[in-house]
Image (cartoon, rainbow, N blue to C red; front, side, top):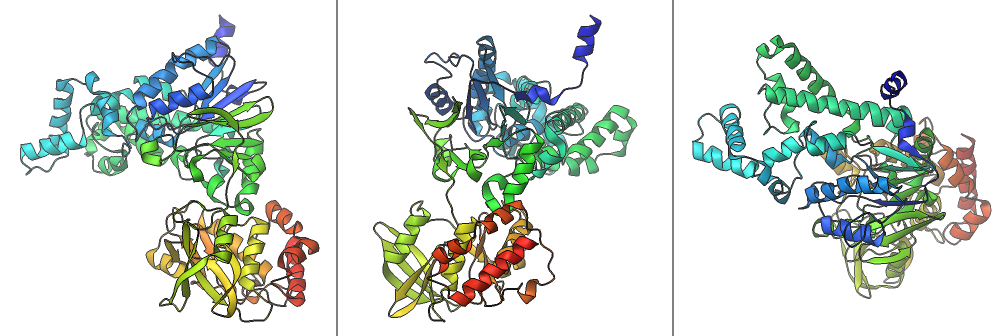
Amino acid sequence: MLIALLLLTQPVTAQQWQFDNVERVVAISDIHGAYEAMVQTLQSAAVIDDTLNWSGGRTHLVIVGDIVDRGPASRQAMELLMRLEGEAGSAGGKLHVLIGNHEAMNLSGDLRYVSEAEYAAFAADESAEERERGFELYRAKRAPAEAPEQQVRDAFVERFPPGYFAHRRAFSADGRYGKWLLAKPAIIVIDKTAFVHGGLSPMVIERGLQGINASLIDDLGIYLRAIQRLVAAEILLATDAEQDYARLLAAAPPATQADAEVAAAVADVLRLADSPLQAPDGPLWYRQNVYCSKLIEADRLDQALAAIGATRVVIGHTPTIGRRILERFGGRVYEIDTGMLADYYRGSGNALLFEGGQVYAVGQASTERVAPAAHPRQVGDRPDAPLSVEELETLLQAGEIMANSTDQAGRVVVSVRYGSNSVNAEFIKRVRAGVYPDVAAYRLDRLLQLDMVPVTVPRTMAGSEGTLQFLPPGWIDEQRRQADQSGGAADCALPDQWQAMMIFDILLGNELRTVKDIRYDASSFQLMLVGHARAFTSSGSRPARYKDVPLTVGPAWKAALAALSDEVLQENLGDVLDKRRLQALRQRRDLLLSE
């Protein structure tokens, strides 16, 4: 009995989130209430049968977060998964459910994405008395005192539809789904493959599996219980949104401090409101594994993988380009959020399979095994169709120029059509014989896998030699960004992108980059670099503007620069740069390698 008691009181260890020698692993992500699509995907992956019972044997099934929100049948999906947990264990397999950002939001009271259909699924569990009590508290404590009762009641019904209060109870720390989810980790590792909803951020390097799965999720439980205590004391209400907790507690009467338990609950809510678990750089929200280029993210990713004993990671959270399973960083990252909720994301269910040393994907409506596709290079949105880099190059080189005009900034903007696709591009007239600096910058960007320079090709227009550079829609420049003070929530942090830009400019010998030459995709703030007319000087040293700028040229940069051998540079740039500029480029490459 003593041994058993000691075992029960031992601290949680990382071993509970690490599994070895697993025969077969299946992973899906971002169900978002798409119950039917989830079922079809699990059947395609051969983990459940036609009667919705477990048929996966010793398979480990991983649900990589975001079961809830947006769709109509989150509750139905959770109930099936809860049943399958037991069935999988009885068969020698295992079902792992990971917390996603939407689970954390539902637990903590951020209900912005709960659909009316989701609330309706809880309506039968909610009594008229419970709703009326909720209304009376809302009217007395939150509604404007002068508002007519019917007006308040109408607003109440609109904001808190039938099922709202039962939903909140079910996701409380002691509720059916809250209790279930609080026992789930954020990260697991199976045979050196990590699974996490958002991504492996530097926080994972600092905290490891123990810090994320035990400490931070324990904090989430403390936070939820403190909220429950304050709701019971009617200091917070079940109708309050998480975004308002701090403001409401700041305005709470001093008498709340007289009750020690209430005072402790207030302190816990204020202390844990900005939990690292739900921070933009936390494992539930982090997107830089997807949006940052290899040169920016690879070193951090390798450190995070090493910190948790993994060699690759499977992530959801960010819907994939083309809505199919993708891999990047040489197979160190697999992206599996393919937009299962078709009405919202225009995708379908897909499962990733690890079996027999191979990696496959199967679709919602097909059991055919296909290899994950490579994450495509995409600098700027493609209108009309998801054109590949090669297709866009062909379009710009061989397409028909339909129209051209000069905009207010003096740019020559043309419309180019090839087949059924058309794009806008900027024509840049050549200024030096035999030298096409914008084409050279684009090709060098591709060799490095920096992914910042839009597709650029040589092209003659109306007898003038020059280049055509893809001009994506929906961009802003650095001047506009500064004026708007925007970009703070960029999917790849702006300081990281700027440092990569500066290293690239040193390599190019770019003497001038104005705020007009720094552009962003306005939806994601992905950097787009243009205006390279002053690049590729004949000097082999750092440009004067970067002479004293401290930069870190990490292992990923060093490897990419080392791959730019003299032969590679000659083969790829020999037709767009003269010998003198190529030689200076080699010298600047060697300079960066020595730093």
